Image 1 (cartoon, rainbow, N blue to C red):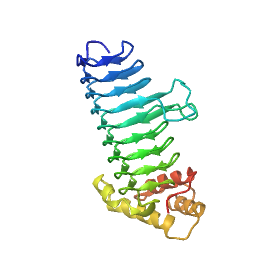
Image 2: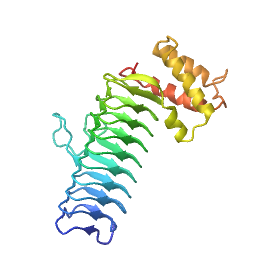
Image 3: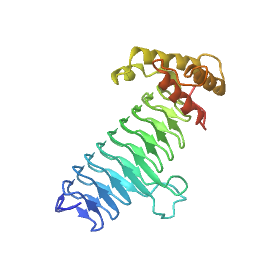
Length: 271
């Protein structure tokens, strides 16, 4: 990371930080030791980034964000945990993202091309995929996992250790106390399932056949009267042939992904 980054004269950048020469750092921002920032990332004014934190390329972090601070966990005793942020993320005003803890992965991870709106909190050890949208004042407790293409409505609150599957969506002011399966729309306090995110799937190029297969899988999970284990078995049977080989039918891979998520559920699912 050679060259000289474009750093405002009032910004404080620790000599032990590594910034690509194309990085911009705004007025009064503080970049700590152990921070690495990739090409074309822009850090706005009054941002604090603490290390160990790695931030990839083409990110934009707006004013007053706090990135890589120590976890809000009373067990934390100064262990060298970290935060990893990918490429192409937008992180808006007053967002807080904490480092991990040794009780879990030790790393909080935010993937690529995520849109994180103002006042969002992402706690220690969270694992966030790619292409997500977290609307204003959404809060994730520790150890939460969020899959690709998830949309969390404004003021969504997610309990620690919950998992939210790919392409799921929550409504405004949703309180998530259990896992949200892939493709499911959930809302309420506490969250309940309300069908599949069909409009979001269409916008992402899912064919009518794939969406129909996901809708059938939803009915198997929620409308058949099956227990969770019975629903998993039914979904597995529907996504594979007589010899256990994957079907070539449209949507079978989506149904298999749903079944795999359900097999990893530890907190139960939203109902």
